[in-house]
Length: 190
Image 1 (cartoon, one colour):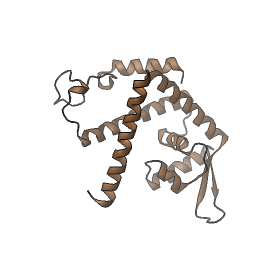
Image 2 (cartoon, one colour):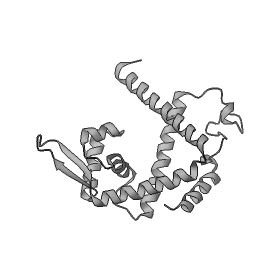
Image 3 (cartoon, rainbow, N blue to C red):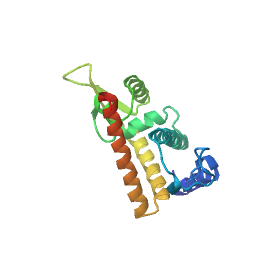
Image 4 (cartoon, helix red, strand yellow):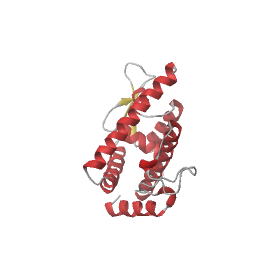
């Protein structure tokens, strides 16, 4: 994805009132017209979870658009995310599951598709034939590099400076803390 493609995509997003990238919040009809982010009295965890799910769908849409530009039609965004998660490593399926939010049966299906498309190599473990190690093929590494280049162009278009970087890091830390807290609560109770 070229940098000017990213700028045109962002312009399109800004033209769509439901996707506007600004301080104006209009996702909840109960909020006053033109409410600013700083004006919100309380954001609930439920609303945050809904926002994260919508943001994830939007990100999948960006990946789908990039796959289309790259003329990759044999895998989808979920499989592309697995390629990005594997990276330069050689992993077991269990290690891959720990890196992402995949359901075991889904990841098996995705890995089969990636193997059929020659994006990954699956090698049975010498020690335990039921276990497999996974690594990217040259085709998988090339697609991963193309997707990472597109992500870097998007980041350059969105990140306007040090303050944006600090906000991104704060958001990441906050979401990571929520992930840990919600994971513990679901396993051990509140």
